[in-house]
Length: 212
Image 1 (cartoon, rainbow, N blue to C red):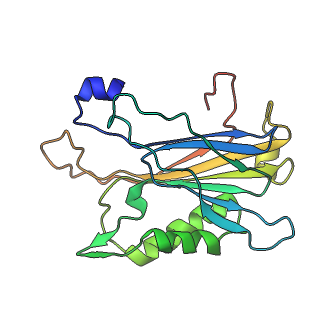
Image 2 (image 1 turned 45 degrees about the vertical axis):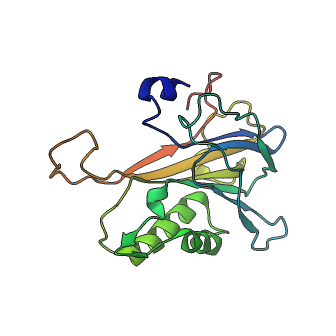
């Protein structure tokens, strides 16, 4: 409603929301027109696991005054599972009329790295994508986030961090962001190169307010 009121219908925004409940072992999500994330549900017996999109279609924010986002999709969430979220710039790599790296290729990259850690999966997917597209300039902002469920003690990197209310399960997220230039509000193209920014969220449930 705020977007509709402020932009008078001239602006829409996609949005994906997910809540991970480690006590129940569930992930619940709602989607407002965003790219469907991929979940990698591990095989307890050591197999390849399953890679699937999660969530149901929803209307982008700002498209309707009173949209209904009450529907939530629910999935099991256990140690070893991973969630791969991304913006459309990751899979919109147009060179002429050819998309060099589309969703099918992304899914294959994720599946190939299905047994890797969250950090290794992110590096493998981005590495494969960058090898395919070469020096193609970004046509849109590119963001990739991997969220991984870890058993307590699986990683020395994370095991020393204080975690409250996570029922001995930690969640780590990493993202790499590339922003195209110039910004839409700028009339003059920027000549400054924009370097990728790496962000790591080690405890996504750090305080009661939900702030990381």
